[in-house]
Every structure is written in C-alpha cells, then in structure tokens.
Image (cartoon, rainbow, N blue to C red; front, top):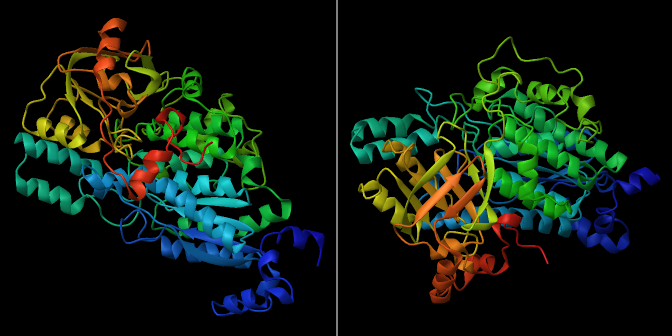
Length: 560
C-alpha cells in the first residue's frame, strides 16, 4: 500500500486493518462492505434528514448523492444521521429553548460518530438554521478533510410569501387587520415544499457565510433545494473529500482568521442575520481562531449592504439563485479589495482562483446594488455597548427603522409575558420592550424572539416600538431590535436591574445602548437583586445552562 493511500486511511485503517480487526470487518460486511471497500478511505456522510421540518425533509436523497460521489472518487461513503429541530415550528413555545442547544448536539454527534467509527473524511449536509454552524463545529473539532453542503432554499409561497409572512399575518390578525380566513390562506400556501426559509434569514445567511469561508463548493449556498444543481453539488462534495484527503487539506487549513473575515464581509453585504455573529464566533473558537464582536464592527465600517433581500428587503433567495447566487457578489467584493483572495478552499484552490471565471450579474439586477450605490454604506449589524450591555449586544439596523430610539422600558421576564402584552395592546408606541432571563443560561437556550418581533410589525408598531433582550432573534426578525445583551440577566447583568418606566436609549450611530440611571442607582438595585432559581435542574437544558459561555463568546459548551 502506498504512503499516500495509507495517509488517506489514517483513521479507518485503525478500525479495519489486520487479523485483529476481523470482528470490525464482520460488522461492516453486514452493512454492505466488500473486501475492496476495506482498502478505501471511509467518508462519513453526516445527514440532518428529518421529517421534523421542510428544511431537511429532502436531505436523505442528497446524502445518497454525496455517498455516490465519495464512492466515485475512490472512497467508501457511509451515511449516518444527526438531529435537527425546527425554529419555525417551535418559535414562541417552551420548546424553542432547545433550538440553540441543538447546534451543540449536532456538533457533539458528528464528532462522536466520526471519532468512534474512524472516518477519514466527511461530508456534512445541513438544512435548518442550527445545522450549519453545528456541522461546521463538528467538522472543526475532528479536523479531518471535510466539505459542507447546504440543503438549499425553499421556493416562494403564493403571493410571494414565506414563513415570516405567516408570523406577521398572525400579528395583523391579532390587531384585527385581517380575518381568520385570510390568515388561514397564508398559512396554507406560504410553505410550498422542501427547503430552508426563503429570505436572507439565518439558514441562507450561514450557508453563504460558509461558502465564503471556503468550506463549501462554489455555488452551494445559492441553489434551490429541489434542483439538479443541488444533487450535482452533493455528488461533487463527496468526490471533493477524496481530493482533500489526497492533499491532506483539513478544516484548520481553510478556516483561518482571513477566511472568517471573508465570511463576515459576505454576511454584511447580504444584509444577513444577527445569528451570524453568534455562530461565526462559535465556529472560530472551535477551530482556534480569535474572533470577537469588535471584528464585526471594524469590518462593518468598510463593507456596505448590497442585497435587497428579506426580511428588510423585497426579494427571496430563490430570486438571487436565478441571477447567479452569491458568486458574482463575491467577485465584486474581491475586485474591490474587500475579500482576501489568497484563502484556501475545499476545491484545493484559493478563493481568487475559484472566482476567476465568474461572470457578473445581469445588467443592473434589482436584487444586488452596486458598490457605488449601496443600500447602506456601512454594516447593518451593529455591536452596541453601554451601561445596559458592558460586554456587548447585537442589533440589526438597516436604516429603515431610523438609527436612534429612546423610549420607556416595559419589562417582561419571559417571551410569553411579552407576547401576551403585545397582542392585547398593552405595548404602545414609545415603548422599549425588555425581554430578559432568556439568555443562554437564563432561558436556558437563548430563544429567538421572532414571535414578538413579528407581532410588533403585524400590529403596525415597527417604527414606534423597540425590543431588547438577552435572547436572540430569528433571521426573519426586523424592526428596531437588539439581542445578545451581555452579561445576561440571569448572571446579574444590568438588564436584570431595569424597571418599568426607565428611559432606554439605543443609538446605532454611536453604537451605544444605555438606561438613564446613575452608577449609584444601578449599584443600589444590584445589591437588592437576587438570582432566580434555574428553570431546569436536570436534562439537556440544565446541562447546557451549566456549560454554556456568554453570547458575546459564541454561547459554546466545549471551552475551558
């Protein structure tokens, strides 16, 4: 056996080679291995297929294409499953506390299966929001030649609707603007089939970020879920792992500091989700790259928002797919000196080499603005600091909301409390809705606030009410919203000290968030504050709460 072959089998050889591994081979023969297969590199295909959500309901087929690609490339593909949950289903419920937790479970399970079974390389296929960072964190921990595949975007529903249309219709119904029949019509037609939520929400944001990072094949982030292009992408990914094995190219060679800066740049240009801040920091920490909130600020000063995509814009990902996806955008950014073209990618080539033959968008496409006439000259992702967020908070301010909001605090100890008061009209123009004890530890699980933000928009208060939380937001949330407030209330952060009627000011130009209280008053309130009892004392949520870091450091569970 050649040195190259042995090197490409450095993990599987320990499992299947020699007389002492006859029992291992016997088990594998029962799942289809032949004598020839034992001499091939094994490629684990981590599939997030599930009937839990349309985002992932087609991934079983995609996993088979990835396996076939690995086989065609001279390896032996082995499909295994990990989990997914559905934010769209769980939002606004207690179950949503498991959402961010699922990112860690996905990473843990990929590491567990691949580490146990001795896979030499991996393909990971994700669909729903937490799948993407969860898969990348698992691949980063293992640091074996790997490719990530995005399951693809959904098509628009009737009347150019999507899941956020349903949430906002719920708010409109609660105000009396639409009747129950209209709401039901939107409910029945907004989600037409498989694929991830259709705007530049968290799934499409993270898929784009990962392609810019270099961990997906070119074009993977901008393909429709049900398409020949997506099937071809999966097959090519399986084949690509064998080439990476031959050249010994690992995630640590690709996921560099410069590559993460590229990912941040593309997220900003696309007007992407606030969750990208949380997930990119988590991914970077997993691979050993220093990344912080300040990096988003610095990059955001030089990178404009160019994409007119939902939730703040008009178009959906499928419409961006139709004009070429994100590759022409990346070529624009590269030519302008905003991307580092020397970063290695899973093609074995640099980013610049991958983009060399990319054609520009059709003349004056309405979806992507020119660098000379951007939608917003600086980033929409604002890292805010002040006496309410000494360790930072994350806001998505497109400019449509204005850049400054000052109002009277209306404080709630949970998402459910806030939602009830938004729906019954208690929350009025001029309020700053404060939702606390929803952070990584306090929730636990750092729930998304899509239901209350959609209710605010649906009730016509999007320009008149702000919302701040130590929880987080869906990529579909928009309006004057600030999340990831750190330290969180459960740890005694200043958010825990706010009372109804306190004046809160959010300034997205100065990047500040403050409550109009003296240091002495905050100290007096802190002395009187008592930490609430944990909401969970056993099970996965309790375990997560004991291990999780602050949102400002990615809310990860595997750090020292």
